[in-house]
Image 1: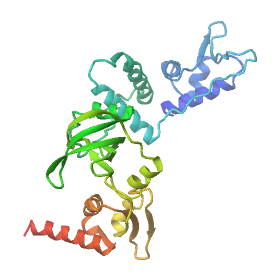
Image 2: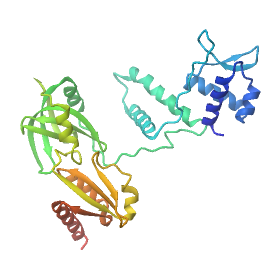
Image 3: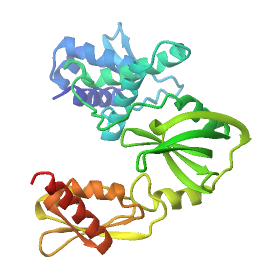
Image 4: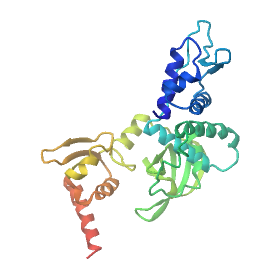
Length: 324
């Protein structure tokens, strides 16, 4: 019986008992030593706010009711995290550890302590839980020195004037924009904005913003429906409204992984009689989609459209030419 089973069992014993339960009975039913019983009780008090009291006269433990009826009101919260909760807690913990002492140190301290308490409950006697789980950040670029100014303008609904470096054309340009929302995508920060210079919605990579200045002019607001249609209907961060649909066939081997992957909210997948897996993905700008397709090499084939098939084919031929 592990630590969490014992916590659940102790909760059931105390909830069902009308009188204090002796430590000897707890040792027998939980199949553990006296010291372990004490540690479990202290953990529940400290980390789960369990109202466990000790009656010296009756030499036993019980739940304090806190009401006239004597009914136990305490409910045991979920003890183990699901994958997303654990990732969120460890990510926030790492971020808080990286925050430099300063303006928010006093305000952040209780949050940091509470997260440490939650993680401490899970690790028990097995050591540092955060040291047993790794969260890897891949291909992240240095953060923008203008992040605070941009985030402030986004929250305060003010226009920005920025100098932006476009990597695709190796050119810089000055833009006047109305920021709509900040996006954290694949370990990098982006800004969705209405570009008054181009008179269209655009996504700007924050690390490519060379300078930024907040203007006094109020930002123009773009409706949530229009933002969703433009930025999420097609594949990738620089998506735009979907104009094409990619049809991809993955080999039976790679399909074991791909069939469970979420590439896009509107993707459609099905197993083929050949054992391959077919995926349909809406897209507009093919740049990011092509990069992800190339990761699978010979284990994927672009069936349609022909323009995407030819683009991937040229990239593969160019890559092969590097080795000839």
